[in-house]
Image (cartoon, rainbow, N blue to C red; front, side):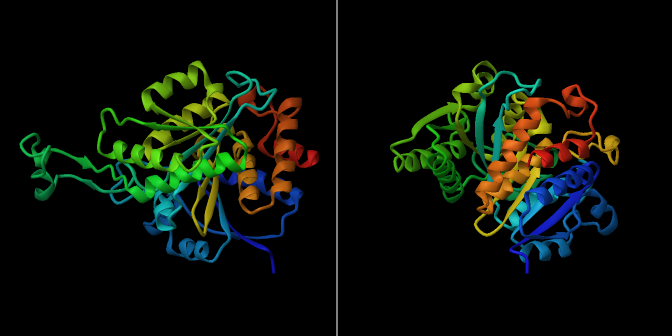
Length: 351
């Protein structure tokens, strides 16, 4: 029996292409795993009216972790909800871990030396899923809302922040900093305006920080961080923030180190984790094996690290870094002409 049961979820569009690349590399690194295919995404919605089918949920319940490609998300489709958001909440994958590292030799780096890890709360905030249109009578009567809106002509999305959610994501960021010899954790918020929810998040962050006297603690407004990431990204080490803020600044930080073709992500809970590149499904490129697989290969590195296969994770990162530095195999976004699979095969050779 295989040591690990990994749910294999290509999803839509180029999700198939990049997961094919990942399989080449995972086979080369030789982990003892059984890969179980499962459906997810827009094609599932078209077939079943459910973007995260019950069968996939059951497979995930009996797995070690999941590996995911990409989905097509279409707004304004009645009843449709992101299967990734639903998966995060269903399995309480409260940590979204996003490394943003400038590997030497990448022509798309803003500058060398960037090495940021962003921890984004993954289950609450504005993505909690409590949205109303029209506004129910009870909500319309709340202090601060009553008399200021026409309930029939207003939509409301609730930003839900809890002590538990705030405490555990900040703790995860500090634990990571200690484990990986990081020096500073920056808490990103907007408590000067969004006083109740960001205020609670900041209050819990301050409490947690006191348990880690060896780690520098900083607080910064999200708009200032958006500016300073461009001006001086090497001043950041570990960042922790709420769901929407984390979604935005992690994509911004990814662009500093090559764009979404280099942006990997781990959705991590107590008993399950799902790893993914953060790019979309790019339907126009589906099946062409044209896109950059590095984000997916870096997601595989995150998965190996989470599994405790730290030596293999390190070997894989070294191989990826070597291929980037040498520049012999590059996809079109990096100015090259190599295919998705050719890049993966080059990484496998370095392994």
